[in-house]
Length: 399
Image (cartoon, rainbow, N blue to C red; front, side, top):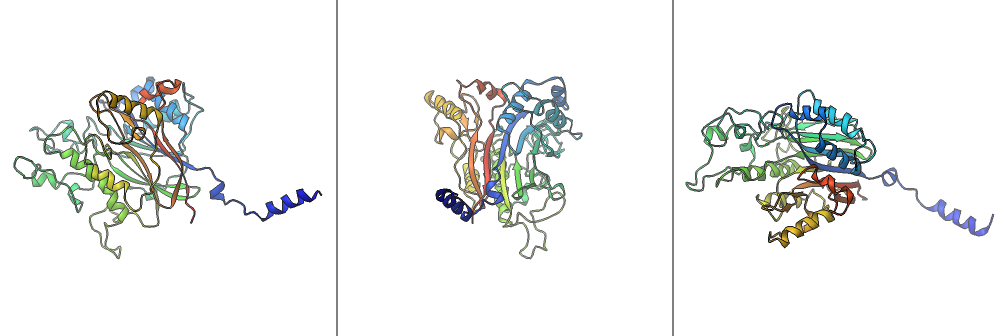
């Protein structure tokens, strides 16, 4: 054997082999507000049955990005899961124009949400109790604007936690809406005691990935608009985001873990997320850290939580172009143009509303927002929704 070849073999033999975690591809996690909702009960199912152009575009985006784990916001829920079945079988599993190869998700999680569920109360102050604003979450039928989790890896359904029925007033620092003219609570005491925090729901979905259990913490807080000077939706949006602060701090149970306090899920299990758990928070939070409506301290507090990883913000060139165009037209924006995730027209502009926030203990290998520039043939897919898919590639952090 040639001495040089022998030396190279000797060096290679001494080098450590990569671990399974290091050699495995990163886990791609995403969130996408799909706008696949309909004002009529069963309307989304009928559209998917007959062929829906927006659903094709949404599927094409997913086929191009190919996340391993994704939250779809504004995907109408139906008890028979017919919409989810149709979307999987006729759209994701069929190659779409400008999309990619068929995409199959063997695992999913979906459940009832508060939107459109009648409360029997006059929640919006219009003197009636039967309108869409009187549901536990704004909606014209139960399940409108629902949530759907799709996964390549098994979901531990027995350990999923939902907080759909958690009372808003249970939060220790609940921001009860006030009438600015009188300084008094906007809701009557009896109504305030019954109000639910989640406009849709808050879910903790444990996913059994090759690197271990990952808690997918997902929600879709209400837009902080469509109200009055009392800013009841702004207050609710902030507290829906703030819920995760409490959940990550595990401050909903006594130190011994035996005394149930306020942070209890819909099955009666109390307490937050254990300190050693790895997680990703995802969803359309309807709150930009610097621009638009909303109480920005809520989303900033989540971004700066000690358990949330400090990582580069997902960005896109198409979003940056859109934000700069609005700025040139006189719409002032303080945040970074490339970080926006949605285009909401000339009055509002482009905002960062959609988040994928990994925990400490994870490492970001890449990230982005699917927002092609207008000169890219794929830019026609931008019409799928007023939001754009945001994604993050994750690995286990080295000790």
